[in-house]
Amino acid sequence: MRPRQWIKNLVVFAALIFAKKWMDLPLAGRAAAAFGLFCLASGSVYIINDLFDADRDRKHPLKARRPIASKALGTLPAVTAAILLLTLSLMAGFALFPAFGAVLLAYVALNLVYSFWLKEVVIIDVMVIASGFVLRAVGGALVINVPISHWLVMCTILLSLFLALCKRRQELASLDNARVHRVSLQDYSLDFIDQMINVVTPSTLVAYILYSVSPEVETKLGTRHLYLTVPFVLYGIFRYLYLVHRKGGGGSPTQTLLTDLPLLACVGLWALTVVVLMSLGGGPA
Image 1 (cartoon, helix red, strand yellow):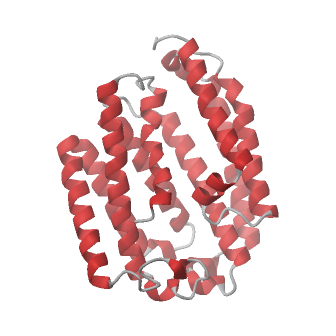
Image 2: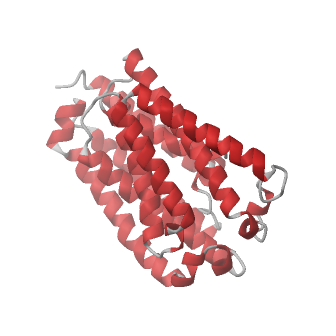
């Protein structure tokens, strides 16, 4: 189920925070339930993916340690667990809020198609990863019944594309016979990936800067000072690129974040600053 990857599901809380509803306990509870259901759903998808990729994972220096690839977990228990988690998460998702259940179902369907096919298609593979993050964000907005911000969608797409491309770059640069471990890498090269990163990186920065000074956002968040968080975003992206290019990081965005203290501190300070600015700005206009 890869619990360490559940940090990705924290995107579900983005709408709650940027709608300034974090003190609304019923809505916070719904968002927490949505987070838990995404964890269960993504856990089932990870199990199915590991079953499908078991033979290939056994040839990978790190993935060979996964329970299914290492044969620590048998096929029948894995299949049973995947079915139970998938069924439970979808039933609970539709019970929680039908529209959220539909988004959760779309997330599962997209990831299954990715596992069986789309992860082998160049460019589409990283765009599907980005779409998964967008569905998390949209689900988090739907479950608390707040409008889905186009800024939230745009920034989520660009940042997740940045992380996915950095992951592909690390895989291509660090693995012997990388193209054997991931078929789509046959159509990538380091120069090509670097060019895409060079497109996505400034796009992410520009989108966030425009977001931070947008009159619409100022009205919704009740502060005109969100631009003060831009230095944290700049440092975070620069630090991540440093880890990718100089330290061989980025292969697992979650591990990179959790093990690099400067990056983790930057994210924490960014989040704290956002909350403080919105709190000082008063209630929604």
